[in-house]
Length: 569
Ligand SMILES: Cc1cc2ncn([C@H]3O[C@H](COP(=O)(O)O)[C@@H](O)[C@H]3O)c2cc1C
Ligand SMILES: O=C(O)c1cccnc1
Image (cartoon, rainbow, N blue to C red; front, side, top):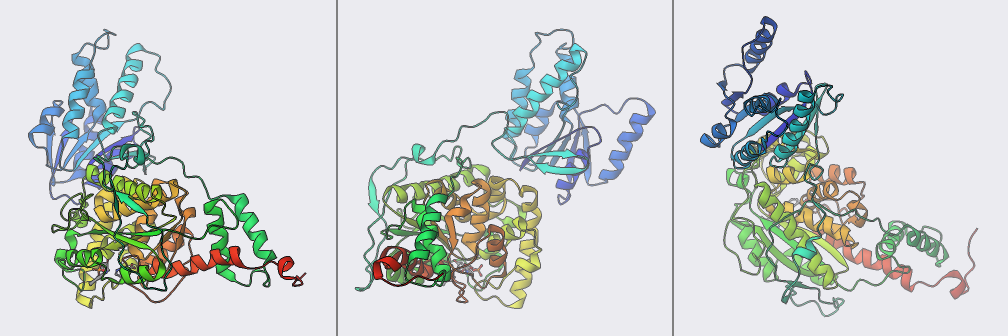
């Protein structure tokens, strides 16, 4: 993980940088400044050294690019880039010579940073907020430093501004190289349509119109985390639907939540009365997580691949419930640790996500590809006529990353968010709680950086769910959330695409304690509470018939006028 820490003089930026590497057993400290100077300056350097302690090996050098390339995976703290730039400008004679160009050296440093595979924390001064310097050399330094910071930020996963000892993670996409929002649908245009899995349904179940999906074009994930502004469901249509509810032959508001759901469906579709659901679609995102190998679940990791095959052939709970509710089901292998059917693995990012306990679930590039895959699947389903989307999950151990995300994003302690998952015993509970604690230690620093957060702890399955749910909102398509895992992805999706939550309803509330916190944080109240704790999308699909009924109420009930029934006050 590459982190750039910016801050003014005495802002606390060095202390924050050291804090980020507090868990590393040994740290290479690259001092770019000279220790020579007056007594006060030396005392200041000594104080820094003492605070850092013995874990630090100090290297004094300004040849940063070589140092980084020589040992590209050693936990390293560089303090600071301002001194490095000063030395560079000195050497180039840039103080006197306006034409002296240092851009090649900056480019070379950025390339070395981009290639760094270990934990790298770079400290740099932020002088651009102060007065413009009255001297040409002061102005030159501020200009060059501004450019250097922007270039380095572009190759770091995390950029943090420290002011008065307070650290603020700067959101991605607002850096020096603004990336234009590119809808994923444009870069992943459907090619040859193939049908979603749709096993036989009971004779008395409604016939869904088939939403078809397409083979993916090459997904490289470019700009996957950049979403256009989400428009809210139509407020005026919501008002029309509310007014219609009052004209229907029932006491005002007597159908309670069913009325609210009908109003919501109307406002999502932009029409009152709303259209009957034709083609609800479930996508089960599957993936393994390294943490599961160390016993955080009641079931062994190989169950993930076995259940993926079961879902693909229609034998899982989600298939049965979806058939009854008239929804299609497809399962996608995002990171299963075994080979799966090529159609199921067409978006696969890797075989098993990495270890959330070390904050290395995915690389940033993998997280981008996973988010892009989720977006592409949502796009393809909506293009093919899906009118309601549901994300489901399958992955042994996945309640652990989900709890890490919820704990981090709702500011709850590990012991409060940990749950019994598949039904773990007390010894497993202790291991799982420790894993959540370790994951949260890494997740915390990315609290406001959804892509980095997904990469650190979520895994490709949950990252894809986040992309899928956010894209549903972008495409103005309502979605039902399932249990803990999809709702943890929804928390991240709401960060990726603020406002997305207004396109979602919570199908049910699972027995996992963290689920309630996540729903609360999203401002959602579950439709059902059936003590379910399965995932796969089963809770969401169970609520689907109620959503369909809420539409029927608005479309099929007679008004007081039509039925000749006297209204109330
Ligand atoms: C047979 C079987 C089917 C499942 N379907 C969903 N899950 C759910 O349970 C697992 C999460 O719980 P934990 O974190 O405790 O492992 C995930 O696989 C999730 O999809 C299942 C689990 C099993 C064993
Ligand atoms: O809340 C869920 O969705 C859940 C709970 C336990 C196991 N799998 C999923």
